[in-house]
Image (cartoon, rainbow, N blue to C red; front, side, top):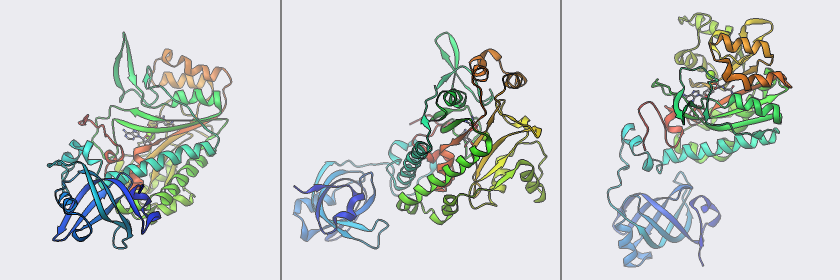
Length: 432
Ligand code: 4AD
Ligand code: MG
């Protein structure tokens, strides 16, 4: 029996006869030869049908294939140095499974709204293919990294009754005869996990009723949130740096083909894989903006254009540490040396991408945290269980959150985070 292989494994079968199951992405013919552009979910490559090598029926069948026809092929793998992929197949037999006319996502240019309306089909194209493969590498690399570092995966609920990140962007829902919200962050539950297991990370969808139409905001996005007991902020920054260096290194190791499909220069990612991220204070970042003649007041939060400006100055991610307390959430620990600021940090990606992660040391003192909850105007009853963590066995602890689509958008050099997730959810998009 001829072996059934995937396109990705072609290099191991040069000169051999193999079978494959494939879909057609494009077709070109010139008389006695038909060039079929094929995909199978692992890669894209070319199949060549020559009239002299196949039966008349097979040649006719190949000639009548429409885009996205599905079929089995038998043939011999050859090197093809002119293509992205490096190999092609000379087809000797072909067996059609489905062949219908009218596939809407053609190889012509389409507008982004059209493509998003056809996301269920668009995902088959080269660009989304490359992005989703890289997403998969980043997911696995993240999980592997935390396992190596002694963390366990800990799952936070999605239906919640309280707000870690402020109440303005909560999705409200009815929960039988109560009010509930969709989780905007798993952090408070992650802190529970840290006191039970030492070092944990959550990784799952989070929800924010973002009414803004920016290139960095989704209403449903994936966040990875580690939480570490017995850990101060500096050590947390070390972990953040190692994490980004490791996962970027994994993309460079596994996804050069996909980066090429995206036209993304891998050299731009190499500095990140080396680590050594700058730790810039909030005050220094403000000074950078002011020195450049930008209109920015100490105490304000950075807007997207401010972050983009600062992040253009770096060749790898960097930290901005110790923001003023007024612009960050209630659970952070104040800097004992300067109570106007928190012991916190955002990570900004280079090339203008801006914030991809944010975190802090957490306030671990019961009374201080209680008054910070009250000052934030939140209802103490909702945080009773959270305050229990400060009553029993409270320890210094830190954590952070990585916005998964933001990381993917930067690694893949995307214009908008909506391309970083299979089915983006934004203010005006709920389907497909
Ligand atoms: O900065 P944020 O709001 O921080 C938290 O939620 C903390 N509880 C994290 C923690 O310390 N455990 O969100 C974390 C990250 C941001 O840095 C950003 O990358 C991403 O989540 N993010 C979004 N990504 C896409 N769309 C949105 N609407 C996002 N909002 C935040
Ligand atoms: Mg943030």
